[in-house]
Image (cartoon, rainbow, N blue to C red):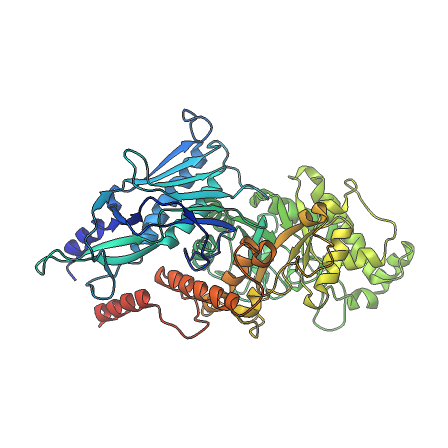
Length: 601
C-alpha cells in the first residue's frame, strides 16, 4: 500500500446526506434503523433527493448555547465536545477499507444527483455551563436533517445538556453508510463517500430510565485497564450511562489502596494485577467524557476472603480455610470499612456507591462463641439481625457523610430488604437516621423479581433490576435478554400504571458480567451484542411505551433482530469483536477484513 496516497484519499472522504422537502409521514419501524430505537420518531421523505457532501478534513461541530449565544461554555464542556468530535470522525473513518476498494459492492449516487457542500453539524445545547454528570441528568435530544435551504444548517442537533448531545451523535452515526461515488467516466477513480438515508428526518428521543448500566467483575479474573477503557466506547455506542465496577471479591483484591496498600500486595493475583489510583482516575475521566458514570462496588461484609491475608484481625474465626464474612461485632472491622469507603468516596466522584451485602455466609458467626455472646447481649436471636445491624451502620455513615466524607447514596443487593423486613428490630444509626428512599436496591434474584420489586417500591425504596440480565448465564441468548422487561406495564394489575410515585422508583437496571469464566480472551464475545439487547430495554422500553412495537405477533422479533444484526455489524466495523447471534453477513466488515488479510499476507 502506498501510504501517502492512501492518506490523501482518506482525508478527502465526503459525507453525503440525501435531503429534500416533504411533509411528515408516519414513522416506519424499519427506518431509520438505529439502536437503541428512539422513543419517539417522525420521518420525512421525498423522491427528489439531493446529495450533500462534506470533507472530513474540513468537518466541524458548531456549538452554541440555546439560551444565550453569548454565554461561554465551561472548560469541561469544551473538552467533552472536542473529544466527541474526534470520536465521531474516527467512527466514520472506521468504515473505510484500509486499502484498495471494490466499487461494485457499495455504489452510490447512480443518477448523478447534484452535490451540495455541508460544513458540519450545528449543535445547540441549552446550558453550556452545565457539565456535571449526575443521576437523572437530562439526556434527551432532537436530531433534524433538514431539506436544502439557503444559508441554513442542514444537520441540527439540540439538547438541554451536553450529555443529550452525546446521545444524539450516536444516533446520527448509525444513519450514515459508506459507499463509492459512481465515476463520471471509466478513467475516474471512485470517491469514498457516506450516505445519510431516509432524510429529511426528525428524531425526538429520551431514555425511559435514568440508570442504564453494565457491571464488570475484575476480581474473579483481572481485566486489563486497556479493555475497561475500550469498553467505554462500546457502552457509549449503546447509550449506556453507568459502569458498575465490581472491583474486589473473595478471589482477589486488585484495588491498590493508599490507606491499606497491604490489601493488594497480599490479595491481588500478581504484582501487576492491580488498579492504581491513577488507573482509576483515568477510567473515571474517560467515562465522564462519554457521559458514563463509574460506580464502584466493594462488597461487605461477605465476599471478603481476599482481605484475610492482610487483615485477619477483622475476619471471622471459622474452621477450615474460609474466614469470611467480616467479624461485624468487632469495632476494628467498622473502623476499617469506614476508612476504606472514605478513600473510595474521594476517588470516585459519583454520588452512588454499591456496598454489596449479598450472599453472606453466616456459618462463621454461628460457630463463633464470641459472636454469639455479643449477639445475646444485643438481644439478637438470628445472624440476619447481625448483618442488618452492620448494614444500618454503613448506610448511616454513607448517607450522612460520616467522618467528613462526601455523602453518598448506597446501592445494595436485595438481601438488605429481605433482612430488614424479617427482623425490624432496634436500629443503629450512629451518624444519623436514614430513610428507605435514601437507598437503592439491586434486584438480582430472578425467581422472585416481581414480588421483590413490588415489596421494595411499596416501602419507598428506589429499585434497579439486574436479575434477568446475567450474562454469565450462557443459556440466555439475545432474544431471552431482550424479552425481559423491568416491569410488564401492560399486563400488570395497574400497580404502577396508576401511581407515578411508584413508577419513579424504578430507576433502571444493568447487565451483569460476572467473571468466574470470563477474562480478556472472551470478554467481548460474552458481553456484546447481548448487552445491546439490555440497552434497548433500558433506553426505549418498547413494551412500556408501545410507540414502536406491536406486542402481538412475530413481526416484533424479526424487527428488532434485523436492527440488532445491523448494529452488531456497526460495532464489528469499529473494532469490537461482538459475537454473531444468528446467521448473517456483515459485508462492510467482510470487505475490510479481506483487505486486512491481503495486507498481512
